[in-house]
Length: 203
Image 1 (cartoon, rainbow, N blue to C red):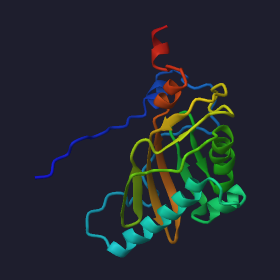
Image 2: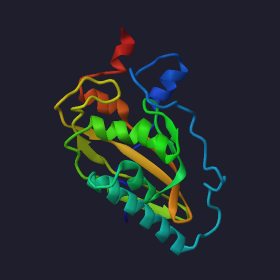
Image 3: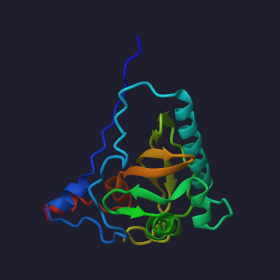
Image 4: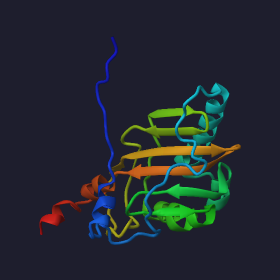
């Protein structure tokens, strides 16, 4: 008999801190909003879905992962993103980074600073990938490793390689991705750089 051997639960503690009046991060490029459900209100699947729709969603997600995973498509950032994202995409990022709307704003507020601030980025692992209907997602830690040599999220520049723990959920519309809910364990990322955000609450 197969049994579950390990489970993980991610809770956006920094968002709770912000609601309580704390500001755990020094910089945040985009506004942080309470993440809503999918725009078409179709996140709960009550009936069986066409397996081909799930395969389409998985294919688009894998193409997007391949683009960002190589970190060197050779295309300008916005052109690269447009290969797999709708222009009016919505990226629901975690507290500390924030949410952003449209490819151009996403490139300016997250993807651009992310790539500029992190070097020696490994390929993306995303060990577990799932898809059903118009929705897909991945997890599996570490998703990738990198060094914040350009500084990131207000941290001083560092040559210390760290792990990123990420959970991503996507919604496909047509042949491109439309919405993305992403959870990043930023507390752990900062802790690896010697910044104990939760520990500072005792002072």
